[in-house]
Length: 339
Image (cartoon, rainbow, N blue to C red; front, top):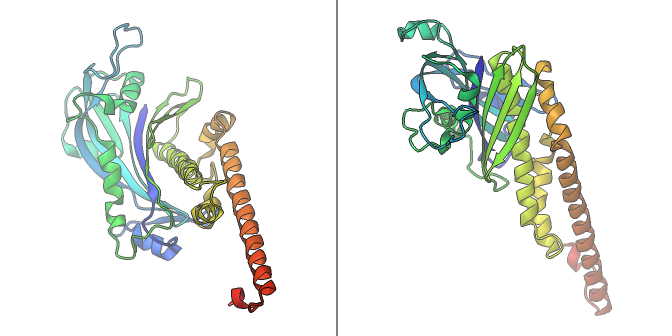
């Protein structure tokens, strides 16, 4: 079986983290459906899962032994019909994700069936015609490079749709505490109990990522949760690295403090790698912690942020004391700077 999905991650446009009660209300996207919340180790809220019916095409990558392979050309496509799952996820009351995923299965019928047939298999696309999981996975990850994408499965649009109502909530004041961008993670997992487990994670430009995985038989929702977990922590690394680059370290201590203080106040406590990943998928983090070493990179960056905050505060305090002493020598009021 092949499971594919896409996740958009960004900072919620609100000046403070939502309380658990506010988060539950904001992510109530379906009447009568349950919003799921966790309190440990970081507050986490997931909306009800929504279903989207699609009748689309899935691209096929060129065969591995084709010496003239061109990822941008139309190497063929397979028709697929069924439903795609989506949900909104909020981590720490601050980080909002729109997530979409579906399982792609080989055909069990030789023709297209009525919608009632596909609705009885929620979260599954059934192909009509050839099913080659490896070629479908490779093509899905690079589908944005195709010249013609008009009929292809658009998981990006479905992921954005899942957070549209959340972003429109009147409780949000549209004043995020840190100016950051968003990231997009497109992922594909082949569930093959006979194959060895493996994972590959790649940055594509400033805001796009790709993740491919080979695993045993695991529920598609668990794979989606693991991908969401990875996307949150990749976003944290990206956002903190961007703030450090803007901080003018070594040039202007006051600017450095103003730039890095929001990182300490709103982001540094959100790191909890693997917290939302099931035991069957722990190899994902085991692999990524060895290389490229995400937690090591996070520890290095956060230590640099803390050091700059400490050094900057000490430098400003020393300058303030010098000004006070100079004022006293000149006969000024000693409490002038303390008011």
